[in-house]
Structure formats: structure tokens, C-alpha cells
Length: 107
Image (cartoon, rainbow, N blue to C red; front, side):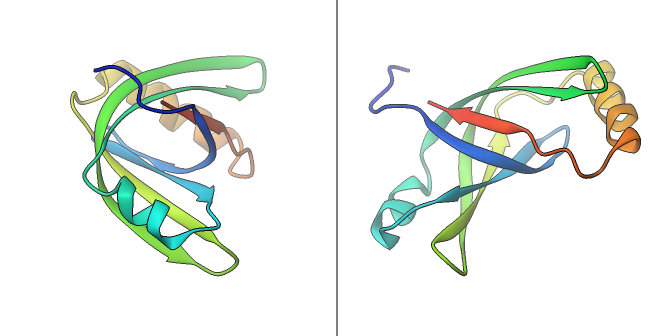
């Protein structure tokens, strides 16, 4: 439960009630491999049109996929499913704009 390193920032790619996926840039392939199976604390806010939703979840890294130019997607399964109300609010906000990317902080 205690942090073992400094926070990492990434770009949110996708989110659902059970998990999320985010992009990070890593220069070493071994670092990406070390994330697999790790537990993460994820904190971020989604800001769209003056509205803000806070996400503070813990989860398990279930996949790390390589993309061109040292980009990776990290797929996390939440320990607890997001509240139904939060998921509905996320769905409403996502229909307002699809181009807004949120920054994710991972501990």
C-alpha cells in the first residue's frame, strides 16, 4: 500500500466501470514489462465544459502494450467498480466532446 516510486503522468485513452487504459512514454522496454501485474493508485480529474469529475482508484495492471515511438498503453482493472452515477456522468461528458484528453497521475 505504500508508494515505491515517484508519480508518473499519462494520457487517458479509455475508461469503463471496471477499468481504464492510459498512454505513457517510456524509453526502456524493461520498465514497461515491470508494470505488468503491479498495483497502482490512479488519481485524475476529467474537466469538460466547466464540469469536473474526480477519479481516485486502485487497480491491477493487466496488460502493457507497445506502440510506435516509445509509447505504451497500460490497461488497469479497478479493485472496485466505479459507481453507477459516476459512469453515467462520464458518459454524458464524453458525448459533449470526444477530443478532450485527460492527464492521469499514477502512484
